Length: 383
Image (tube, rainbow, N blue to C red; front, side, top):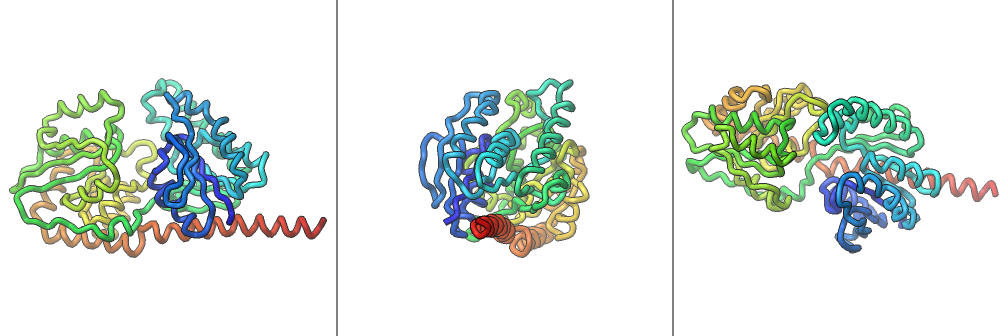
């Protein structure tokens, strides 16, 4: 069995993309998979060997822990090292130069542009840090064997790397196979939002929109996630629309699927800042998989998905009144809303699912391992 070592210093060990999608898919494909991540113990879960990385007390210590991640990875003597965080680029380079393993850089986001939104960085440093991150990523990618990105557009940042592939973060169909929609026609109507509760993600606007919703049903906006930074929660609670909000905090993914089943609309109205207009939020497709009609930002890429599949409405994310009108429309047109939900689920079943994406991941691994095996055979022959 070929050995795979997955590295992350940022994400939790059971991160959906890293553990539930990639690691488990690789185990299923016959690979011996280890995952280095911040955890309290070494253990084996679903065939994945979790190698515990001591939890960092703060962001600074986490970044300095790159050397510790490298040492743990080096001990694995893996055939492929697959790392997920830009702060691990030094570890990735060391593994490339000091081991015989192939190295993959998995890019989830536009990290350079993301620096422009980091509240903990002084404003005057953000542009400098953003440019530095872009330069480091591009230079380092020359030495990596492959770059995986969460979208095709992200891959444009890595023209120097010869082997690239987009592996989208679409839903796992099995998680939604047993989900049953709650279609009770009572007088309650729930709009659900799942994800980070930040200003850039348009939380203020969707809460304000609730103030303008005048409909025949009792409408509530249900928020799942954490407020970042924490003082932002107080700012949102002072908005008049918060009277129609239920804040549930963070819950386990399995619980979220059940909550989606009892919701009526999924909403994701990110502001047009940073990387948002070019990215595809996972929650959009999870709403669709759950059979919910969606209300989404009117970015061209998102319009192509939502309007192209007739699975919801797109709105100006900076206009709470327009968001409110979309909510009211779906309430007052239940037949059309139901059809939109069905269309979204059909699109996920046919196109936007992890089962399709996993094939691209496995094909890349087979290619990298076969290339290495061929080179080793050729080397032995020459000897």
